[in-house]
Image (cartoon, rainbow, N blue to C red; front, side):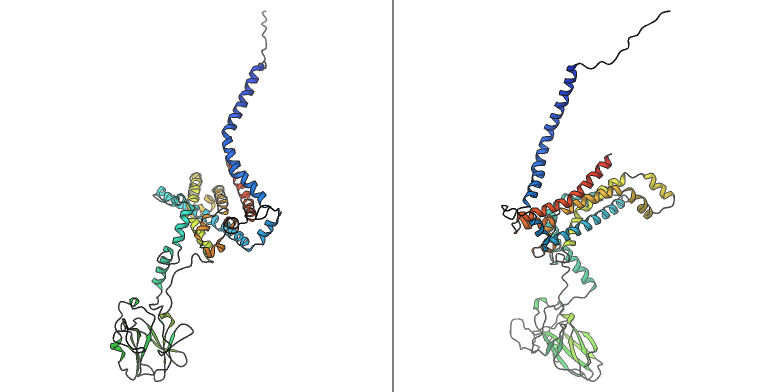
Length: 455
């Protein structure tokens, strides 16, 4: 019998020189990585870390930066009405803007899937992202202008209003004190003395430029001297002004024009309107079939109402919603694209199974699409929350000076206190620290969401 002996081999430790080379290689790799990261760390420290630390330290000193005041700036900050209003407006921004943007982005992302030219539609909605906040602010400052001849939104509002409501043709017309007309408390004009059937009256007004008369206006002279039948009241409403001078005040002269489309009412002694009519092209009018008695002729206030000038978009009441509207125009495309990317990654088999089970599109959207998109919607919402807390450009550019305080947010208030006239960098630094403390939780939440999705 032959016995074969085999020698058991073992892994011997590497020579000392090989272990040293491995350590040196790892050190060189770390050194190279640090060399590549060092410029970024340097910029991060210079542009982020140092300003944050400096602002925190500066917030404990007075406006001059020489006297330590401790928490005095923070106490002053929360007792200042302007800061309280900035906090309130920032809260409105945080609640309204991200909610509307996320909702609009979700709706548009779902609808775009059913549009034939989906790519072109997405491009069109995303284009405002290429516009800077400065340019967008100027665009919307012009769009919100209260003059309908300049502001496109007020031009549309005036056109829409005038399509459904009559406008006054003589907003500047008025009566002289001695013209036989007296002004009423409601803006109307009434005859000083009563009239009765069979009377003729002449109602002269001034304050209307001849160039502003309607094209249909005719001379009032021919109808001014007509005699009224026994059952009628006749009269003429005219512009008591002779172009080129001359003429007699309180009397219709040959060159004086009638005021067409002027509303006239006959009012009884107890205040009831017995009849109403509208003047002809020469300003003449008549009331037929009046019962015997005395009447007061009234020119209603609607004849002299100022024209509708639109909506005061940048007034104290609407300035914040108006600026939020401009923000929506810029960021809706961003929300739509991100949510659309998440929508494209949804499992189609779940949607098709729901359709086969008889679910309609609304049920699929509410019970399947939205729950599956919840992580994406959360990331979009939190990202927008961080962004609106720092909004500055739109508020500063769109809000006019008189309502700047009504539209102010924390970022603009920080700038105004520090550099925009307040010259108190201590209080401004405290506002900056407050803004940082509000932004950090949302940033931490977003970072954790990103890490969770990567895992």
